[in-house]
Image (cartoon, rainbow, N blue to C red; front, side):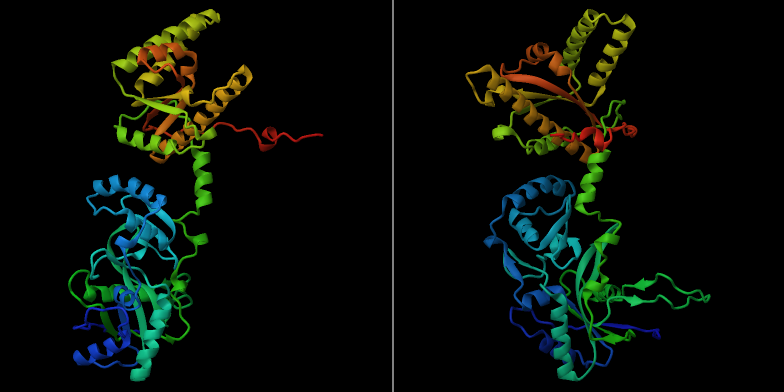
Length: 470
């Protein structure tokens, strides 16, 4: 394929506001005539997705959408992050529309990055609120952009007898870069990828891996003329780009397979890696400030842990660095010292032990106390079932503790689970004036780490799976 030194990008002026049922090929022909142009062999027509969606009725009214619990929860989780970045807030109805158009949520922070049902990775499933007439009306991506491009190409061929290509484009953001660019979402007549493998470079070396995303390059070039605001140029003619015409094309050929996508791990692998890398952190913490709101957000996740009878027996108390925490730890250390003396431990041992726990509990930016609320336990007349019910409660709040540790890990916070409150129940309840039905169970030291922790040795699988011999 020989390249041309000049390519023309011509915006077709005078395109009317598109309504459902409008004949886009006829509108293109008329716009060409009004602009003093006629299609030539090898031309490329780039069409903004919005007018395709409007012409085929791919719109929704947010006022008619009832958000699910998933949409409500997702909206609650992203709204604080959206506000932090000064972005427009998403309504639960919009979030529901995004969920409806997505295979999965790839990332949810101040933006929602999703994989659409087509396989595109983009913000908000490609839903657009701009350039759409009507309060609360949004456009959705065409269900089959290739098919829509094909219909328009064939219709234009019948009208003009010219072999051309059609690209349907949208504006997508890019990883690692600011700013949206034109991106092809549907094609007909042109291969998405220009395969340069086997060709020679300037010095005669054979190209081994060079694949050019030519339709994305063309869509990006057209975007410079289309604009993003009130330019009103949703259709662009590109003339002079030399390409091989092909009837059998699909945008799917430009989509990277998940198996070779280095930047998107599959969900199962992410969870496995995440669970294996979490460590108990007993080292000094960084001086970096920890936002209390982050702690509260982690506890919000911890409350979704499973529990027997759905009793949700867990109660969390956040202890900041203050006199209350300091005096509590002092009294607990007095008891620890007394207990160790009764055990016959040496003074040196006791000193090291007391000093270590004192530093861990006093110096962490936050100390979280986990209690079990026994008022939610079932009441039984016999001691055996009362004991089992108590153990059931302990198991339940332990699941919440695990959720808490993992959510802290997601926030890049280090933590360690300590059982010291079990040995100082009365001191803690008295000092913090806790309700009688609260039983202190665990401490969690929380802060930003200064170094990583080496993984401890784990028992082999055959050591922890007991084979029955019956």
